Image (cartoon, rainbow, N blue to C red; front, side, top):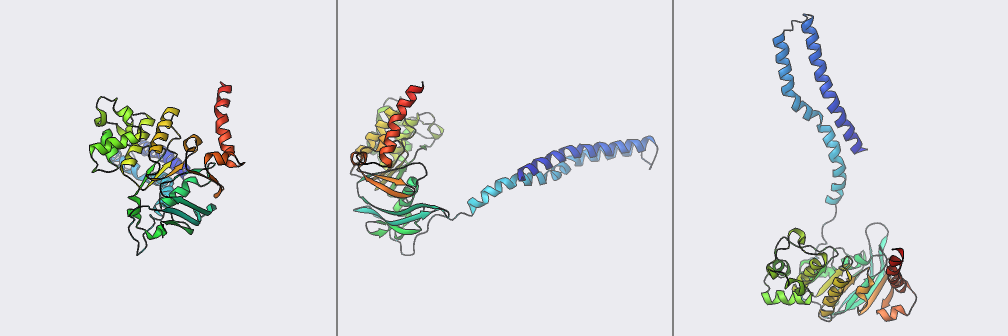
Length: 349
C-alpha cells in the first residue's frame, strides 16, 4: 500500500503541475484579450518567465511526498536490520583460545530465533581431529548447529564446551582466529591467485602457499595457467570456474592453519570431478584438524568418521556410513533418494 500510494502521488503531481501552469497562462491570455485587470503583453510574458523559472523547484517540492512514500518501503526493511543485536559479547573474564586439544562438547543445547525451536536437547561429543558430517533435510537446523560452534549465536539453554571451557568464556576474536569456514558460494578478491590464497595468512611464504594449494588439489589447474600463481582472478573470481574458485577458498582456509574447519555445503554446486578433488582435499586434512561437514550431497560425507543426522532440530542418528545404512531411518532414506535421482533423470530424457 505504501509503494502504491507513492506511485499514485507521483503520477498525480506529474499530471496536475502542467495542468495548473496551462490554466494560469490561459487565464492570463483571456484577461489580456478582454483588456481586464490591466494585464499587458509585457506583464504576461514576465509572469510566464517567472512561472517557468519556479516550475522545476516547485515540481521537486510536490514530488517530495511520493519519494518519501517510496523510501518508506525500504526503511521498513532497513530498520529491523539496524535494530538487530550485535555479535555476542565476551564475558568480563573471558580467556584467549589457544587451540583444541581434546573435544568439543554440546551439553543439552537448545536454540531458537525467538519463535519455534530450531535445535532441541543437542548432546554431542566431537573429538579433536575428527571429521563430523551433519546431514538432514532442508530446514532441520544443520547450519544453525555449526553457527553455534562458530559462535555466531549463543545457545538459549545448555552450553558448548571447548576442552571443558564454555565457549562463552573464551574471547570470541581469539577463538575465530583458529577457525576457517568454506561456504557454498566461494568469495575471491580482485587480485592474483597467490594473493587470494595468502589472505588466509598474509605472512605465509611462497612454499606454504604452494603447499596449501596442493592440499586443496588446486595446484593442478594453477600450474597450467600461463602466469601461474600471478594470474588475476577478476572481480569475484569470474575468470575461473566454480570448482576452481572453490578449491582456492579451501586452499586459503588450509593456509590459515585453523584448529576447526567448517565446510558448509561447500560441494553442492560442483560437478562430480571437482567434487572428488574437494573430497581428496578434505581427506588430506584428516586427523590434523577438527572438520565439520554440512552437506546435502551425501557422496561428500561417506568417509566421515561419524555422521550426525538431524531431524526436526534433534539428533536422531549417529554413526558411520556403513552402520547407518544397516538401520532404517532418515539417513538411509536420503541416500536412497539421491541414488535414485540420476536414474529418474536419465529415464525422463
